[in-house]
Length: 415
Image (cartoon, rainbow, N blue to C red; front, side):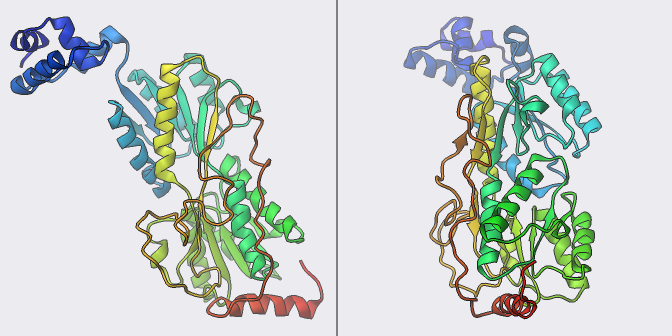
């Protein structure tokens, strides 16, 4: 196997120059750099990363701890993390914490023992042991998707990258209130996760903006998974006054909710409208097609890598939280009529005008950085938009919304 000395002899340079070219540690004249690269190619030289890590105390590797096996959303995030890390010259070590605090702490320690340069972690609902370990060992870490409150150790702690949650959920629920729905059920995620708390906040904001009371009986926990959502949806449908519209707070729970509706023999949107937070690849293939909030999952993954690289380059910089805007994907499960679909030439998550954030989803399509001193919080600038109540649309959703209004009119009240 050729060595660095062999490359140096072939290129007519010193071993130190070869090292500088391969590691990017010092500028080298272009013709000298090319001579080294040509020698590397001709000899088939492969750098010994283990030996290099002993000298530099860097392994050029990133640990990724997310539930990518059990949650398709994190699989899409991985598709953003991997190319961004590879482009920067880093390899990935991946572990699945299964959203379990004990297992989470264990896999993070194993990644740390592999001497990764930094970590990207989607924390569980009880991350205290994780936060303590990372702080004690001063591991450069990015928290992904789920963010921590100051009292959980976020102040001065890890950087965080996630999607906006409050405003997009308010927009989704506001769309349903504009169609005339007054009893809107929410299948929320796992208690303790920031995504769950923030999406419930958005739901409540939309009801308040529409002048509707918040009914605790219409909010149930699906524990962020399909079977839990199926049970939760069945419980909502068994209420004396069941909802006329349903919102699910992630993609797995959407599947569970659809199963429950099918068991009850209910048609979407004729019998009940359905919207979901978190678009997914096959949402456009359902009949009716699912109206959804689309998270920029790949962008979240790529942004997490960039923030980690910034942290490794400047360890003393203040911690920051970066939030990316979501898209509003308007389809037909909400009860609106089918519209002609134009080829936008883009990816999922774009609205019908080709914008990444959808109408009214955010003030900007750029990430929002809650760095030190910004003072922003998820509640500072959120609202469901100003769609108004408007007429009930014709088409497959008109029946459900019209029925909801008729029922409310007969009862002479809202609930």
